[in-house]
Every structure is written in structure tokens, then in C-alpha cells.
Image (cartoon, rainbow, N blue to C red; front, top):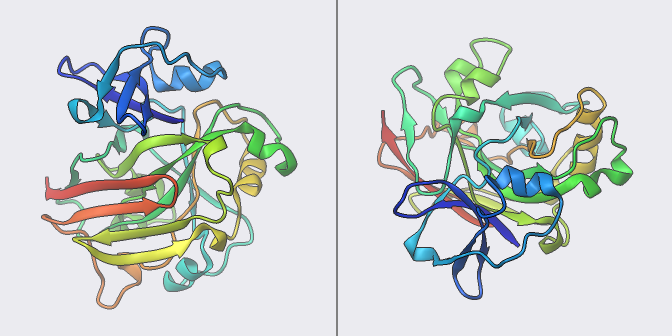
Length: 275
């Protein structure tokens, strides 16, 4: 199933399931206040709510209130090399702040504080069941589903210090969506094509089989240090082709349209405008 957060003309954000065969969104708000509530319930909701044609609703980030957004740096070998950094021996973990999240179709705003805004196509994992010290052998049992995330980054801010989180957390720097695809619909999350294009030009093109640290390893590592919570997001890193690694550098510019596509998950498109 495809879990979404949507609004109608009333403007109220509601959880729903998108039904591709009928192109309808089923309203789940009668029993759940948010998509996080659906995930925390660990039960499959009844699809007896009101239905809306997809073209009559607005989609938002599918999970608007996650507890945390963990991100993994340098998790594709070719991206580590293009960034001029060593292949990591342990996962490189940082955070994106929740207020930076936006949904499909919303604009990425470029503030004057950065002159080097970059793009990063990523597969994101949504935890359905929390836990502490989760072994890799049981890690996938804790996964609710998957979505697309664009880890927009202010490179000049990022490399001014050794801490990355603030440079990744400017307003609108976390586009996510359009839906959370439940785990049962993805046979192998480590064999998905992943790409990013700007204005129709493909700049990133890889496959999740190239991940250095795979999802079970990431869950085991992070949960060995801090308990994971239902609704936590782990964004698994980006392949090569980012603006930082190109010659000349290719930073995001006002007027761009960025599309991230992942096999089985669809596409996430966002326009780019100056703040």
C-alpha cells in the first residue's frame, strides 16, 4: 500500500492510502490523526473512509511529523570518491531537522546565506517498530516502508565545520514523498534503480545495490547507540553525480526543476526558486 498525507480544499492535513488502480486517496483520518499514527498502530487500516480522486487533493510529505531524520553520508563508494573522502569504515550519521521537510511539488527555496546549494537523491527507510540493539538479522522486521528523499545541502556551510546537520536543515531542504510504499511491495530494497534529473537532464543514475552499508547494517548500528522509534526515518545516502563532484560544479539555481526517481517508489519533483 501507499501511505500519504493529503489535504482537500479545507487545507487540513490527513493520512490516507493511495489506490493506484482507481487513482483515489482513501481518508484514514476517522481513526488516525496522522500518518505517524497509522505507522505506530502496527495494524492495517480499514479502507472504509471517504475517497477522493488524486487530482482533487494536494499531497504533502507523507510523514510530516517523524521523531527523527537520520541521514547517512558517503554511503555509495563512487560518491565518497567524488567528494574526495575516504571510504567510511562505519556509517557516517547526521540529522536533517524536521522543519526542513516539504512534499512533492513544493518549492525548494534558495536562501542568500548559501552560494552552493546541492542535490542528493536518496532512498529513505521508515521504521514501523522501534527497538534498541536490533540485530541485522531481524532489522527488516522493523521497517514499515520506503520513500524518496532529496537531501538538499548547503555545501559551503557543510564544509565550514566538521558538523553537517545545520547545512542540511535549511527550510525546504528536505523534500520527501510522494508516498511511503509499504515493505511488502518492495521485493528487494537493495536492487532499485535510483536517479535524479534537473530540467530533464539526468545527473545521478545508479542502483541501491551499490550501498556500502545496507539497511540491516544501518538499523543495527544506529540502534546499538540509541533506541529507534516508530516513524524514525533513515535516509540511506546518495550515489555519485552530485553538483559538488561535477566539473564545473553544478549548484541548484532558481528556475530549476528537480526530479528524483526510484524504482517501485515513483518520482518526487520540486521546483527551485530564490528565497
